[in-house]
Length: 154
Image (cartoon, rainbow, N blue to C red; front, top):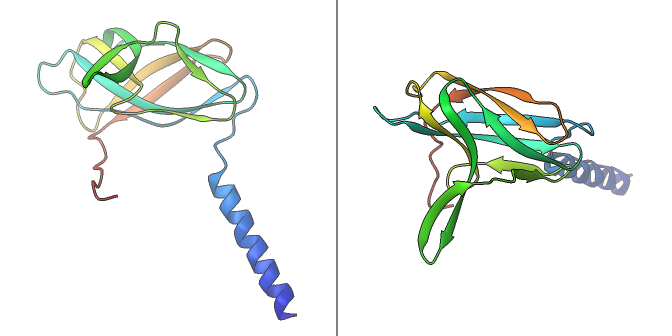
């Protein structure tokens, strides 16, 4: 009986671990949005970065971003080449493989708002619309906040 209980507990714990690692699910033809936020801009800055995690239910592509907050918005990618960090627009959009979380984050792929009409103020909300190749467009309301502190000892 003890062996059966131990085996049952082991299987239950194993199932819990698998469920925790499973990515957020999206129905085919849709994209889910999670953890949307934008970095506050210093006084006078005319550009700002926003970040979000996207999960597509079937293969898709983030094509564009639009907002009333800025003159333009682009999907940007940061790359390191020969020790120099550069940033540029992903003119063909950002691929979203089915069922995989695609994280737009600082120092990597992100949404760049250019020609900001007003600063992005800590505690506020930035609204923008994401347009996809297949899925319907999604309106996003992102919290404006300081980036999370990363522990350098991890």
